[in-house]
Image (cartoon, rainbow, N blue to C red; front, side, top):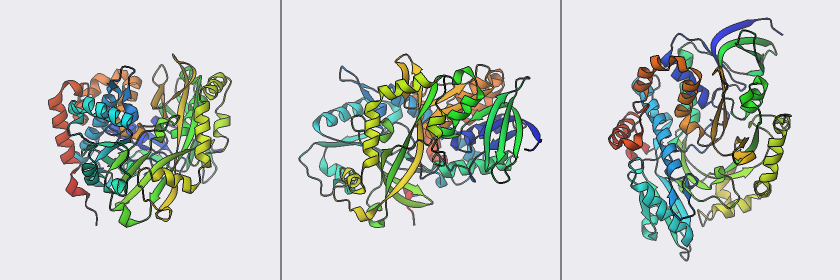
Length: 499
């Protein structure tokens, strides 16, 4: 044990997209604040943010059917899709500011334009998709969306999916060309390179063992250096817990009342990746289908073109799995040790409520490669097993908490838990996650630093021109933002040609 104790203004736990975003925003707002980062792994962006551990979809609700729900009267509720799209526009503006300010370079290293499509089969689903299209396409945020149930048109859009397809069942798709593929691993590494150049103290191979309040209201962290084994004490006025699934345990250790009655349920994912370049070349879109009955929203099947390490890839999935780990590089005891006296009833209630989800996860774990291939063949009828390999994706920990719907409600989304005095905040949950990081971190800043907001607002507006404005009520601003971000981030079809 080292007796060394250091004081700082801000400590960020976890070197993922969220901490990278919060650190970058704070460095722009208050350059003289001291910021420290502690990351358990050897590099930034190695857990949920890593390009092989997430879908890389710039989640703007352009293709994800679970963000548009059919109401009992048959109409389609698009309010969640609008909200998520607006949040993604905030990220796009911030990334554009970083490029324009030369804080990061080469936007194509992390973002590329790629059509986003929704694809459904069966008369009922085709009817739903058409209603969804009609509801969204009148909205300025979703301008340019197309709908077709014409097999010839679909053959133009998605030849790999339409080849050798039995045409006895109705099939339809929507397509919008302004979608994006985002390499969040690359973006995270770029942001940490930038923070490093701004004298942010980034500590890899360091894990936070404990976190508690001092008598003078600071937060004291016990941090173990995994290389030397020494433990140091670090204190800060403000702590952000952005350690993916690991945030649950740290939130519990903080002891804040807001962290009580909260648990986490881990869901792992497996993708299939195509190893045949001829097949990869035939597909150029992110195509999302409909989740099966009983499947969690993050298990929506999708066939995605991806750009990883400057190479075009093709992934299909995700297949859900179960592991008691809260992180891909976590412990088999993570789930067990997250059960505490204050959340025991919450966790048991969630188990009782979600028997169908448990059954679904067990079935998914038991699937053979050939059974996974059969699911892939619903997208690519003549897919061959030898052309596809399995890749284990990241862990997602869904939040379990007590809500108006009762005890132990499983939440599918991204949640921030903040102490009443704003001195500590923790990020929990999963998708849309990284895509909405800038919006989520601005919420953290607003809640945790209310006394600075008036002073910071002009700078925030410089970084995010739409800050404080409803895009929905300002179609001209939407057009302006789309045009400027597309130009700054070099988003156009011709940019996508790879050697």
